[in-house]
View: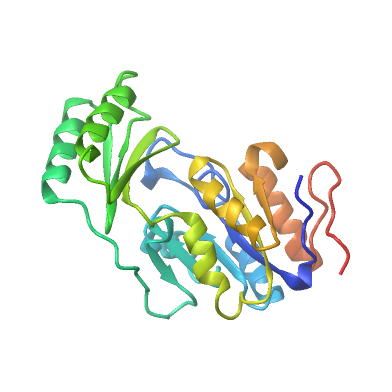
Amino acid sequence: MDTLPPFHRAALMLDMDGTLIDLAPTPDAVVVAPGLPDAIASLRDSLGGALAIITGRPIETVDRLFGDAPGAVAGEHGGAVRRRPGDSVERPDLPAPPDAWLQDAERLVAAYPGALLERKARGFALHYRLAPPEAGAVFRDALAALLADAPAFQLHPAHMLWEVRPVGADKGGAVTALMQRAPFAGRLPIFIGDDVTDEDGMREARRLGGAGYRVDAVFRDPEGVRSWLRASAAAGDWATLPGGWTASGS
C-alpha cells in the first residue's frame, strides 16, 4: 500500500459517492452522515485549505450536500473546477454532447422503468440500478454506437451507470489542475476513491509523489473512510490507516 505523506506536507482529495457518502438507489437519495461536513472543514483548516472533493457530480450538488466544507471542488470529473468557496468556476474548453444524443438517452430511459438520465454540462449518465437487469448491457451498446464516430467523447462505466463525457475530463486532470496553485502547490496529494472513475486521480496523485487509496482495499466501505477522517480531524494529524499504516517521516 502507498505510504501516507506527512500531514503538514499533504493535500487531501476525496471522491464523494461511495467514498464520503454511501451509494443510494438514486443520485438524489444520498445522505450525508451527521458531523461529516464539520470534520472535513476541520481537516481543511488544519491542511491550510488543501482539501478538495473531486466528483463526477456537478459542483452545485457538492455545495448542496457539504456547503463550503471542502476548500476546493472539482465537479464533472474535472470538467468544472472551483478552487475556493466563492471563486468563479473554471471550465476547460471541452465539447458538450449533441442534443440528438440526449434525445436518444431520454428514449432509452423511457423504455426501462427505474432508469434515470443525469444531465451534466459536458456529458450525461444513464443510471440503471433500479431498472430491469438487462438495461445495463442495452445502455452500454446503444451509447457505444452513438460514440463510434465521435472521437472527442468517451464512454465510462461506474457503479450501475454508463457515462458519456468528453476526452480530457477525468479526475487525474482535476488533481493536476488543483496542484498547480495555492494552497495545494508544493504539497503531496492523497486521493481516495472507490471505483474505476477514480483511478486516474489515484495515478496522478502517485505520479506527483503522493498516494492513492481505493476504499474497498483500504477502508472497506465509506464508513471506514468517515471514521478515519473524523479521527484525523480530532487529532489534527493523520489517524492510523486500517491495517496499521501510518504517515511517512517528515
